[in-house]
Length: 263
Ligand SMILES: NC(=O)c1ccc[n+]([C@@H]2O[C@H](COP(=O)([O-])OP(=O)(O)OC[C@H]3O[C@@H](n4cnc5c(N)ncnc54)[C@H](O)[C@@H]3O)[C@@H](O)[C@H]2O)c1
Image 1 (cartoon, rainbow, N blue to C red):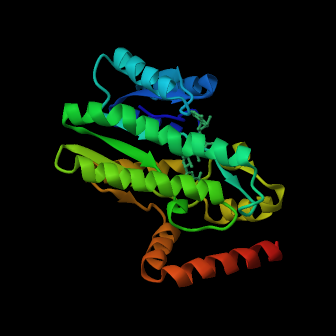
Image 2 (cartoon, rainbow, N blue to C red):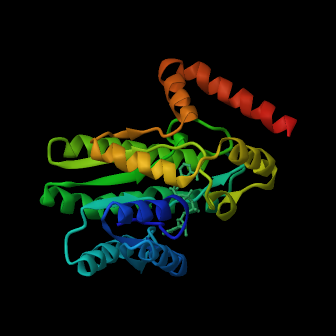
């Protein structure tokens, strides 16, 4: 079961799961793009179904879970809480409350609902896994991304808690924390025009394809690994944040101001 699978990382997960022999239910707030993902899975010889689901509604996530089991005629044994949006370009205090609430609704509550609905089912099953799509933003303190950072930090804490609660039960939890992946998130999100030049450069210079990221993540899940930092810059930020947190955070702020001024 993959949420937000009409595009980007979610679509890549659906295709890779099918490649590995899994039957996959893909959901998205945009049913048409979810159906396109299904068509791609089927064209590659896999089995998939599309559902409409807005992850900001607990009822909708519950219905999605019921419908997925009906379609699969089996319990769901891998859940990927992937649906998410991007917000950036303004400092805290200038970001509208509407943008805060929009981001928290999708990126945080969407994953809380996914875990709330599926964790008991997986515990009862005694096997399977949950992959929560976090971000390097979960710990990077990147300036001008307040709502995004907040939600991704919350989802990392949620994943770590769930991993502790499911330890020894046969259920794996994996938190995917990428830096920049080339997807539609930068066009679909609410990014202030002032941040667009820096963002475009970052995507062009450091962005990787979603395919490699999902392959690493599914392999990591198979090995029972909690953290997936698929890129070198993600691993460098992780280490800096662990070993010199205050220096790192100050440096991230100064570097970002310098980079914005030069573009
Ligand atoms: N692309 C990156 O650089 C990057 C880096 C780190 C983490 N991520 C995370 O990866 C996940 C997937 O993002 P992506 O980069 O593939 O972006 P994307 O925009 O290509 O795909 C996101 C999908 O989520 C769907 N969606 C949006 N709101 C929804 C809702 N309320 N309910 C259900 N579906 C909804 C969209 O329709 C879209 O199909 C997100 O959680 C994002 O935060 C992305």
